Amino acid sequence: MKLQVIRPEDPQYGFWNSRGVNLQFAGKPAGIIPVISDEELAEALQQAVSQKQKLAVRGGGHCLENFVANDAVEIIIDISQLKGIRYDPAMNAIEVRAGNTVGEVSEFLSNEWNVVLPMGEHPDIGIGGHIQGGAFGFLCRRHGLGADFLYAVEMLGVNKDGIVQKFIAKREDNDINRDLWWAHTGGGAGNFGIVTRFWFRSY
Image (cartoon, rainbow, N blue to C red; front, side, top):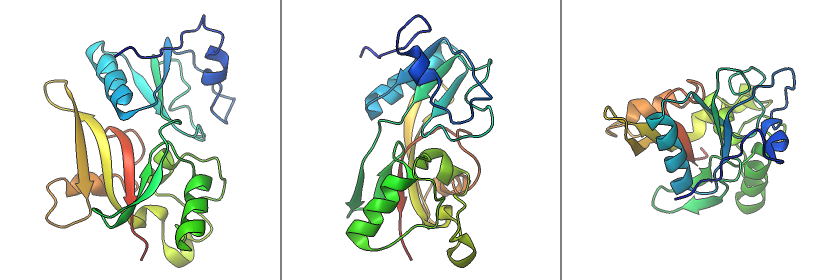
């Protein structure tokens, strides 16, 4: 599989490197990889791990700290094109791919199901980082955090042999990866792997 790796000499580098909203921070990674599929994401992660490159993941670009845009980051994996929202009957939950924004998720839930998740209000915030940080918003005092509605998460992680693996972690008490699900309900983005999908249940 040949990945698109955008280098500093490429004409589109400026666009992809300036996607963060806080322009106070501007790193200069050696490459930016805008992935368009789960397979590309796995390949990009495997390459970075195998080459021992410090990487960061960018979704909506709304992180106000320099977790992504800093000089130590060598590779940025951009997941903003990994979009899709649907009802998953097997999970009995709404499946949201990690590249979606808060606005896209809110519009889908309102139009299709007449429900809401208590998340942030800015429509361009990436759902990936937002949920993993808890997902605070104006409705939280009444309904709790957006992460409180997280039923399951799919992520790519790296095993002890340095090989990328897919994990699915659910809220169920008997789920073997329940601790991993719990860690994604506010433990911060990018600490455990790269999330590819969330499943939400509205209560």
